[in-house]
Structure formats: structure tokens, C-alpha cells
View 1 (spheres, rainbow, N blue to C red):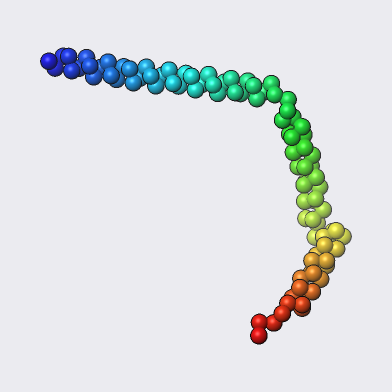
View 2 (cartoon, one colour):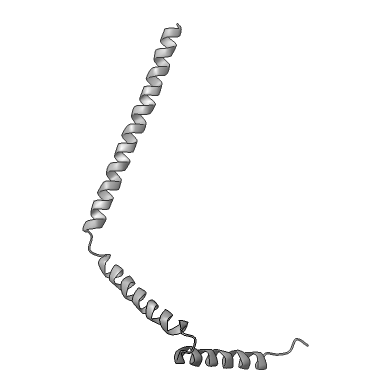
Amino acid sequence: MIKGNKMTLFNMLNNKVLGTYVKTQVMASTVVDAARKFKEDQRGVTAVEYAIVIGGVAAVVAVIFNSSDGIVKTMLTNIFSNVQQNVMNNMPSGS
């Protein structure tokens, strides 16, 4: 009786392991197929190119605004200070 229970348990475990292996292989195959399709797909190339251009523009803007005496930085600081001052002056009082 015990031998039969051990075989049944062994068969159950074997089926679980085999089922898990098959599912893993199917998932791996699906991932590989998706990666292959993504690699061959040219539709995203334009988006990547735009991202590179935006990164370059962001780098240039960062250089301009990081300089301590930059004319653009000074101009924008003055504009935002004036806007802030006008907003503060024209806000209704709390009373």
C-alpha cells in the first residue's frame, strides 16, 4: 500500500515538474519570438531618433542654464521674478 502511494506521489510530482518545464519553455519561446519581432520592427526607429535629438537639446539647454552668468538665465530669472511680484501684489488680501 505504501509503495503505491509513493508511486502516485512520484507521478504527481513528475507531472507538476513536467508541466512547469513545458510552461517555461513556451514562455521562453514567446519571449524570444517577441524580441525577434521587436528587433525587426522599424516603426520605433523614428521615436528613438526623436529621443536622441531631445536628449541633445536638453544637454544644450542644461549647459546654457548652468552657467552662473548666462544671459538667458538672467533674463528668465528677471521675467519670473517680475511675474511672481505682480502676482503677489495683485492677490486679494485675506480679510
